[in-house]
Length: 207
Image 1: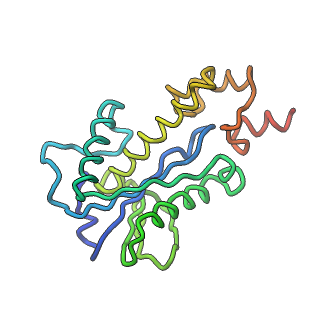
Image 2 (image 1 turned 90 degrees about the horizontal axis):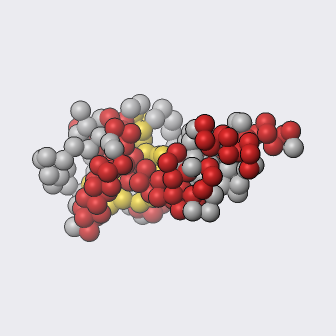
């Protein structure tokens, strides 16, 4: 069950971190961090789960709630991005870490701890950290971060779709669907495609 149990076991403010976009063939990786100033202020009827367990409509509704909580100073959240160029130069894991470090820097809080969804460490600025496999199913801070990052990244890919509609990014968010692969084969790659990802890498090597 998603709750604040993990956050409550850590002294001081806790940022929950998650990312969206490690798997797609196109677009940046987007990370988000959520810091709840109160663990008792969420409406009891609100269910916050891993972003993949919510419909797009549910995610948008929750995103509106998070924006209200931010306005009311109950929640602070920030986003961090790593570009396609950085993904290709660093690899997707290192680019993900970079996007998360950019999130942490935006909080500007000296004595903060972080909890990360995944099995990797950031080892950043001597910050106390804890990695949790499946953290988006356990921690509300991490789950909220996954939802906010997902809403932002989907909006960004929909914006890119306006210019590159044949790839279907409005519906597939840059993932390698049949439509997307076929469009790459027919129309080639764009500035938003990850050249280090297959099948783009092999196609680029042939040309």
